[in-house]
Length: 151
Image: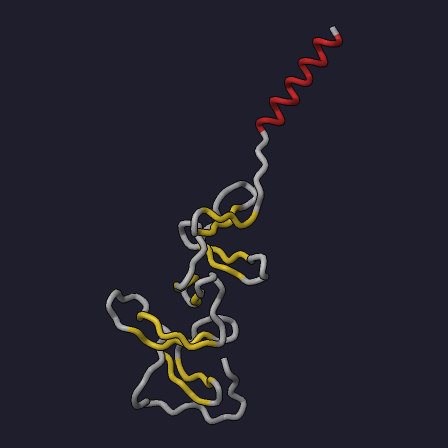
């Protein structure tokens, strides 16, 4: 009777253990694409996640890491998926298929500079609401106060 009870208990424990699935949270590579799996085994989407190099990377709506593209509306990521910071980028105009290329500047936070004047490397530049650097003559003068900070 004791052997039968022990066997039954062992069978219950083994079947219970088989029903528990352990998921490894973290980065997974499939072919050329990277994804991030959460503790429940689901792909993370529309979020920033930190890589092994301590750099944040954007996971788009399909759960794949974005590369050489806009991320989270106001950021741009490079070929390694890292946020572009303190850089000018000449890119296709956002929201258009054949809009030509325009200049954007990404500040020290990585966010695209928008809506007005920004002092970059000692010079003033004007950006529209989409972050496109404007050229030509401005109706508005750049700020002159010494308190202006670079983006």
